[in-house]
Image 1 (cartoon, rainbow, N blue to C red):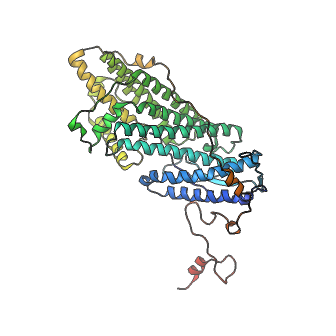
Image 2 (cartoon, rainbow, N blue to C red):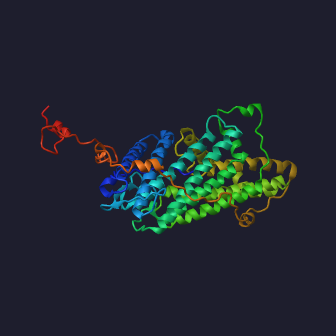
Image 3 (spheres, rainbow, N blue to C red):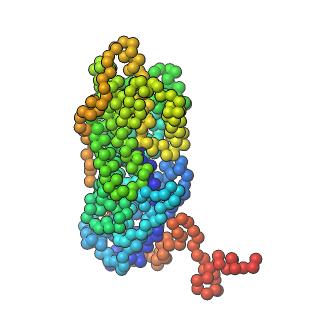
Length: 472
């Protein structure tokens, strides 16, 4: 967790060809300049190796934060709204046409989705802000990867990492909510997933579910213990065993159930279109299952703290059932042959993904939660077989009667970035003559070379064509 989104790429969009401003003549050209930078950054990000993309997210975020304010000022001018108490007059010369590559639509394996053309500034705003929300989610993902590095973080470092990732996910949630309300007011007849209200609403709920689980992870010591035991470079276990403090188990269980509710709503809204990428829908389903399993584990911890070890084991069995694994002690102990080999192979493959920093966590933490449950199950079964000797009740009635969830995060309104008064004042001047070119039309989305005119030849002849036609 969180989900590994793919950032889109886009075509060129010279705003000066589509709009003009009598009050701020430099606005369309300046917006085009910052958009050209964003387009170049997204194209470069796409061609980076997967291990290098996390470090490049800050560059993408800076390009978006530079461009989005100008885009929203253009929108305010077209709608007749003032910006900072200043009237902005923008008039369309012709309808805006722009292409973005949709990254949420299901596609055939091995085939890249083509760019989809849209009309209007609302289409551009939807994709720009959707990209901004995905960058925040990917940054949160990069933060959490540090929890599984070769150096085990301290408790203070762990809290700082989870807190930063939570803030980034909540920021993504506010942007998706803003787009959901905005998409409900505009014409979304294009049918592109990124422009639909239900898609943005589902992504907002997904980000909220992930942020809710991080509120639990911040004070949950058990995943850290399992990660430390799995870390081959960590030698602290030779000095002293890890300390597991008591947790507010019942509260954490209620928070996990709130994450289940958010993930369930996200799953329903994303499945409503029927065209969402299978990897995303599978991730949301796994996130819901993992959240329910976490709730079962915390109910089991609460029972064990109260001296009811048998009831705690029953909760752990129920958690394994939510994850889709063996539902009883006998079945778990009899897992042999191909099934055990497949499980071990899957765990090793996930460890390799974490080491490389690639597509780890695509199962929404399902295997990680299974490891925690199995650690507790082994410990409690040993205690129950030798000391307590309590009966283990059935798990199904316990799981069926779980209480409702409890929310911890409140949704805040999105505050879009804005331009300063000095910047708006500077755009009252006419644009520089040297910057009146075709912006970034010189190359295609997948790269290419600008056409070089051949001196002394007919207009339209290029240096490259001359070289190709040359005898030598």
